[in-house]
Amino acid sequence: MEPLLLGLGITLLPVYSFKSGTVQYAHIILAFFMLMRFSHQHTKFTKLEVFLALLALLSLFVESIAVMSGASVSSLLEPAYLIFNAAIVITFMRIPMNDRHFRFALIGSLIASTLIATVSVWYFGASLTVLQSGFERSSGLFNNANQQGYFAVCVASIAGLLYLRDSLSRNMTMLLWALSLILVMTSVSRASSVAIGAMLVFGFASFLNKDRLSPMVMVGAVVLMAGVWAAYSFGELNSLQFVQRIKDTGASSYDSFAARGYVIPFHDPISFLFGVGAEKAKVGTIFYRIEVHSTWWSFMGKYGIVGFSLYVGAWLIWTRRLYSERGLLALLIVILPSIITGVTANYSRFTPLYILIGLSLNTTRNAFRERMQATPSTRPLNILSESSRLAAGALGASGSGAGPSPSPAPKM
Image 1 (cartoon, one colour):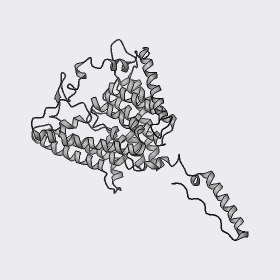
Image 2 (cartoon, rainbow, N blue to C red):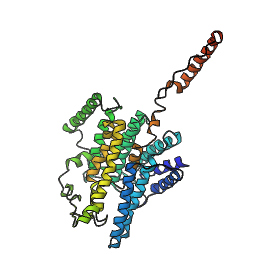
Image 3 (cartoon, rainbow, N blue to C red):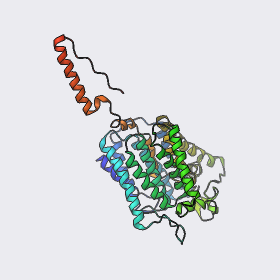
Image 4 (cartoon, rainbow, N blue to C red):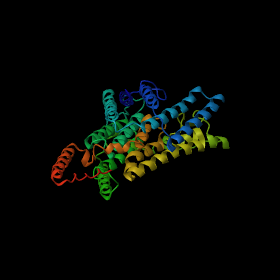
């Protein structure tokens, strides 16, 4: 039942039936999945999980004070988001990926959700090239194009993570990367375009050596970047919408950091330390009052330097853990894309991000290699040959009185 809920929840991630900021069907199903997992899990929390839990408690405290001071009751959704996504991280860190049912549910649903997102984009109409009427940003079943773009970035990063851990084949990884690239290109999201571009450069280069950022990988990345730059220089990419939108960066006053909410007015030391809550942290721009457009800096306005430090601290722990496991190459494929998108957009409530974090820190990650790096004593043909060798030794020993020589211990 648990793998079924896991698969269904991930499959429905690109389906937005209600407005942004509210509960979607995928959240409900994943909530049931997490309840079932938590019902029989007893484990010690990690530092990252403690940081997220403290941030959720701080959010609940600050938003409660804000509501009592006149803010909308909907502000209490902020701690609910944090609690839910913290639970996502905790749960996905402990999914038994050595269990083929969970592994199949995860990979199958990742492919299914990406296909649903891609088909919906084309069904509702999308264009890769510039139209006479200007940019046409598709969103498919998402509520807006930015959600579509960052969803694709998360899918590409998860696929890269699974490939580095030998859980996903090269061909399937390339398929997910290709679909993700289409989703980003049709979303015409500048941040997501740059993020997936950087990710794919090192991702495809990792086909040369996925164990580390070797000189061979660096050469492959440089060659890929040179190829893209040459195509751009000769005007081969000028007809693409996302290329034109990237070129237009800076043409609007909305492109500045100030217009995106980086200038947060703090009126007293208490608000600097603990923030003023989500509603009061919205800043005025030339359009309307918006939340700070940054995954990390948004916490500075909502929950002050304390909340900002807790959230950044969780990211640093994630970075250090992944670096210690897979090195710099994994950071470039898994974390760098989310860093790029997080500079000019706020995805701090986006569930696929926390699925990515949880899978990156999965405690059963060593089991990913079992079926790819089986030791000689665990492969079927070698088991037969080992049995034959022991039998021959036993027959030889019947005449000499000596026992069979012990078999070498399997490598760990």
